[in-house]
Length: 404
DNA sequence: TGGAAGTCAATAAT
DNA sequence: ATTATTGACTTCCA
Image (cartoon, rainbow, N blue to C red; front, side):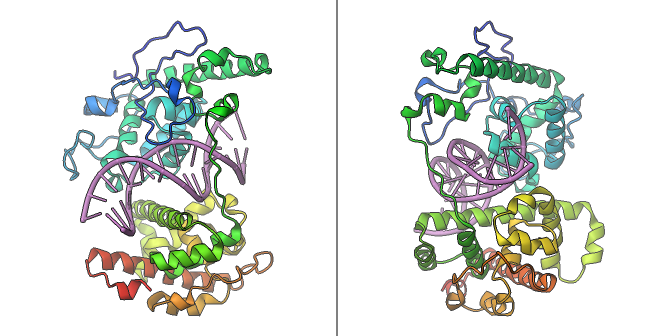
């Protein structure tokens, strides 16, 4: 039924035209390269989400899981918020389809979701539970579900992917000497967000250089985080100067880190909910058992354990198992020492304890007594974090308690 | 003003 | 070539 694009095949010469009209894509900030020549056909192709409240029929073939339409669940009945969705399941099905049909995340993201490849990767690998998503965050899932509802969608997308590859291949071979087929008008818009374009018109804009924090810096930041997930401006300043980073970088790092840890916790929640069994075993303290000890770890071990690489964490964690941000922050913290001390700092005003000092060299020091230390630190850090959130929630935040 | 959520986009890893 | 990671940025909200 609801095909995303109806734009049937096109004539188009260079295969530029597509079956799909990319979902609306509104470049918020950076007028990227070619923004002038409208890189992405901002076709106002109506968001599937918005127009048809995914009626029951959606369930049809794709088999997208769609629970009973339990009218707007809380979020103020916005257009795209009608019913619950099993985000994990949807993500799973999408991944399955993409793999099965050999469709890349970039194409899928561009034409179906209106998102970048990186965003698609995240959404598919770590979908947040529906209840934690904002209206905006739910949109991709609505689109994905709708996408799954009609087999034609995947077929059309496959066609596009095929053309794209063919085009790129052609270009590659015949364009070795920077031809200009692009000159006039960039090739297929699907190239829009890909790097090749940058190479084609390097002049148009300055490629942003990405700051890459070194292992020591990350290490120090994580330690700092462990002591204080919400550092004061003063602390941030100190961190920045000590690490020789811009304060904005430090601020961003904390934002990102907190955010990513939170996401892990969300994910863990649903997993935990899924398997009540584990609950039994773990017992003990709900806070640590639930929050970040087991599941998150496992998850991560699978997802990024390998890539955690460059930090010593990898090694230390190896002894334990995985390496989620959450876990990392706990595991990592201050190498051997902090264990006990970190405990203090967690509940007391640790300004003093904030030691960015020598990032304990990772080269050696594998996990010494990993399990014990890491677990304890993990719990402590986690508790610290949770307490903070509770404090906040309770509206009784006491700066003297949490800020230095 | 600051934090959270959501993304982008550079780039590292596969 | 594709996917995963992650620093930076935008938007929204309290």
